[in-house]
Image (cartoon, rainbow, N blue to C red; front, side):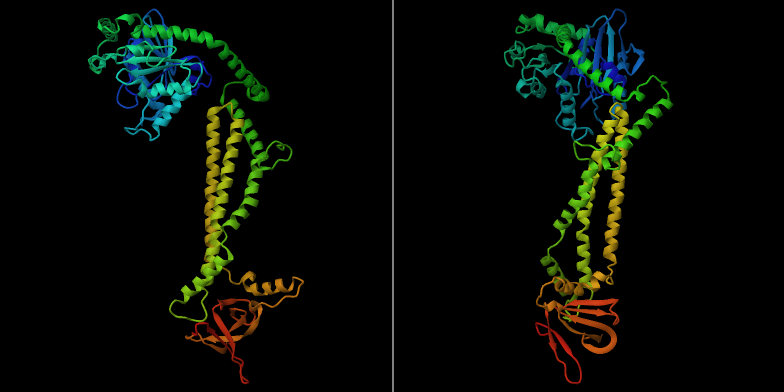
Length: 579
């Protein structure tokens, strides 16, 4: 089953009985596996060497020793140095050469008369600090990968712990306990026993008296780094290992239950019993999965008919699924009324609510209060006058305040666009997953393509909105009826309410007529401009038709005095401070 998944280049999501090897970096995992094979074949070096799970299948077979990779089934590797190079090359092919990791396993079978039938999964060593170009979240990546394997209730956990480390400080043992709190699936292996200080031993640990595991601890002695560099034979190392245990007074009494050879026999036996115990449950779960697949096949009979395995067939399958995708997206957006979902709100409904309801609320929340607007106007007028203390302000304050009000709408608009984009991406992911669930690689490609398009359209929409608000702010149409008739509209609202009301000072028409300016801002009768002095505002038009606005000024801080005589009509406007 693992081979079939590996051939498809996808993870196996069926919980199978297996043994996963877990340990910190430099705990001796590679040496343990090489002891089982009796050959040097695993990559070595500093940092993370194992960057993809290695499914190692040992098959007892008479004849010459050789290895076969599942991704290169027609090649027999009799030189185990070539096996090491192929593992490195295949790792780099999937993960790149930048110390990245991948959960997609490498499957290696070793045929030899010197091995016992056994399957193990070598996982990356636990690490805490990224070094040598490793990703910053390498610790989390490795833990997530290991958890994916050892959380399988049918997986035996082979925890490798160096004897020179206190069991209480072992991250591997702590990690195993999280998924196996009853300690029923964990097997402890104590390595580097020969490196313990003089007068110290780990007999209590091996006798299961320090930290109890139901499957116990087994001690081994690995080759030293010097022996590896000197190309010491593994068989020589195994003989040296047993010689060490026989001569050590503490381990003589358990000589039959320690060493690499005993570990291999014990694991092979335990895995055989474990498979026998769990096989009925595994078989039942596989049958349940087959029923689900059969149901999918019955629903999509056109996709699973007996037909040639050629490009035309693949194109047909792709087009059928794209048509389904299009129909489902149209249904979700509300363009199809024949197939209406009665169980939950569609994504189109959610987007409509965002655009029609949430948008208005966001605008109201961002809009400044009337008091804030008045303060802004007053400050703009004062700042425009500067040191001149002129009576009539230029159009600068009006333009500045209006621009600010326009930009108040911009942020809520962009926020609503982001919300609609998120809903669209969620819709794409859900529908693509539903339509292409049987084709994982195609699912990823289609989902990535559609998401990219949605985000591309969203980016274009943002640019358009920014350009739109810039254009509105750069050219404020003061001839718009909303500006010209603002006072008339207020007066109409007061008079059209159907109730008698007191005329506000804002609606009192003081004066209107022709005017001109000199440098001291005094007003003279001259046919240049037409003004309307109403309430506390002075509006100046370019002619008496009052169609084209020239300027406008608020006189909230001014006093108005009628200085008319029998010879001429005159109105004096002066500031409250006497200027």
